[in-house]
Length: 450
Image (cartoon, rainbow, N blue to C red; front, top):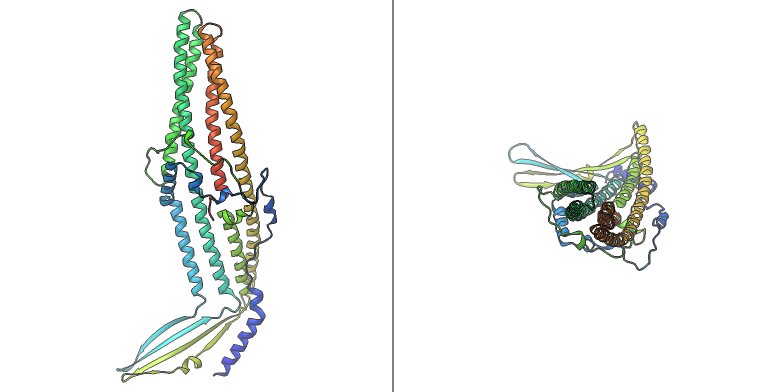
């Protein structure tokens, strides 16, 4: 074996012992002990089942809504684009893995008739300082990050479809209340006109009742416009042409009676945006390793193995591979300033990613807290609304009865009827808030994924 080969192997051994271990650093999660204090005003039991562990079809039990969600998950444009991004990252990872293996090319040469030559050239970058290995690790983190992005898009689509669906149910309920109130005002107008003819009230009472009816009519038109507009947006979300959205009613909805956020650390494994931020942080670690490796030499081994044929005989010279084995060490000389700048840039990106990761955890905690508070508050408001409506319905009935017998004036009737309408609309809105808080919590906890 050539003397130069021994020297090259010795040099490789020295480089491996002195440099590679210190340059190749695995990603380690930073200290995030503060996540234990993320949730406020909520006691988490050790054996409680987190809402984050429940899939969307167990939370949103409306069968029509489930069909719309499945349609959206199949055809939504943003989600399909996210799936292709995962494929792109998978291809990049395969490319990074192949970079660690030797490369080869074949050359076919022809000379005089009856004779030919074939040579195979092989080269291998030994990756002593881990540049290629770090590139592979970075590509792996990028693949996982793209998968987390796809999950984030999917979770957001499920939450948005559910939110739009429940908003339509709330608008339907408010439209039904307004139409029912419109009929009540028409009855009031007929009653007031009869009382005016009997001399028990005046024209002002009739005109005021008609004005209130017109106000409700305008509200009905506004609600119908909002429903049509939201239906069109809903169709775009599930990637279908504009059409009426088949749906149930607000009163038919059944949602979990109890909600649990689970332990705060679950945000790390379930929330896709938090995972995205952490995987971005991991990529900066490997990118910094690559930047450091640029200061050190690269060793490339290359050689040629040849076959020749003449008169029908094939001749192979195995020793030619050893004889032609060439080791090339490339040492950066004039690019040190550029490499130093790249290292400083990589280190700055790492610090930036670290702050982003920590902030993503804090933002997640805020969203979970807000969703829980919204749910608790909406539940209490709905109970109050129901009691208020019972009292106002009784008040309307009593004032109408008194007005017919001439013991009260029309203003009390109009006021009682207006208060009832507002209370019923508020109850529909608060019921929607209660449902929406469940949607928000589902989204804030990562969408029910393992």
